[in-house]
Length: 414
Ligand SMILES: Cc1cc2nc3c(=O)[nH]c(=O)nc-3n(C[C@H](O)[C@H](O)[C@H](O)COP(=O)(O)O)c2cc1C
Image (cartoon, rainbow, N blue to C red; front, side, top):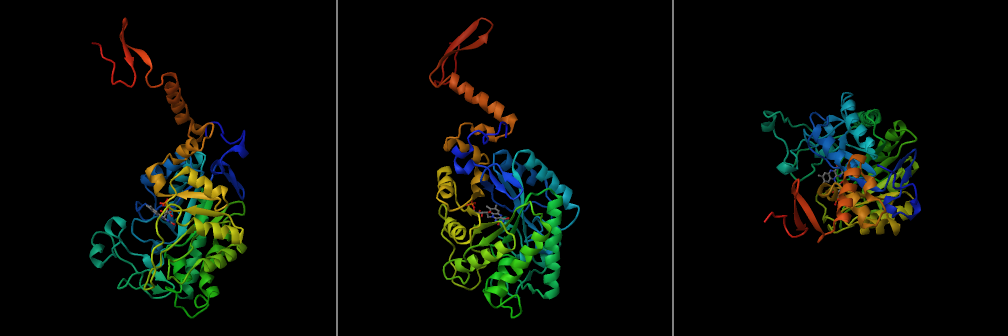
């Protein structure tokens, strides 16, 4: 950020820190802060929480900063506190966040989504319990979700409405308007959330899609809604801005949707102008014998590798990637083009700075804002001048110095 660390010897830099062009824009590095729902919105609009929370990832040096899954219509939120971009008055509120992220040198990115049948819940702090009429008194009125078929998300859960053709048309119109608003709000990268058991995934998976019309049945039929969303968004998202798509590459062992189906989807998305596949997994659940994908570092990177190799599309690897050397190896070995972190950044918002140090970049502090760079360079300078064990004099008055060997507690007068 301060002085561009990339200009002098870009090709000598670790791949993680090499800038990467994305249609008409360039990300300063390949570290992505992965979308993270905050459950901190008021009628869809962001609060101070989002500004600070996402702002800190831009301050920490990420190349691309996603905000959170942002619903294209009010009904497509999971909870009353979920983010949305379904009113024009949301635009200036998001603009404040995108301006801030961009001012710090990162690409502001939005993930547009619709939760479908996973609507009308409490947030994770209340175990995502379904809202009931009793919640209406606390301004938390339940509502009916939409889905490909009238099947509950969990056994015994509320039944969604199976979308008819008018619902599908209205929903696509909401995607179009939301993408337009995202553009007006200053987002530079848009991702379609097609994973995690939400609406698009509910159309894709034969576990949740029992339709017999053109939107169900064969793989082609089940992909139709996802592809129409991609076409709709691409039609308003400018040609010089990247469009990504997040997939659940597999549903888990025993699932009906696997990597071959994802490859077919990715190829069809590529034909519709999607620029990269963000490789996640899981989500639909249901009665199938679906085990979660075991959570170990890089547990989804194999999907990213396969999709990248087989489709020629750039991919994002995400999932328990915490070590800089691991992230760099995934890029070097051709398994991904971008590395996304969620909880790792929550734990350490300056992860990019620390990764840059770990990978031996000449001037890691240049990733930060000049206000921080300058002060932190001073800090490093002090450490060089006075290494541990240095004998120094600490002034206690105009003519009084107390000798002190640093590392031995404090300077004492006597
Ligand atoms: C608090 C939180 C909120 C999340 N919200 C979203 C979301 O809005 N959209 C999404 O696609 N994934 C979401 N995820 C998943 C992350 O983007 C990421 O794929 C996942 O946490 C694995 O990465 P990690 O191991 O680095 O955390 C969320 C994860 C966390 C921890």
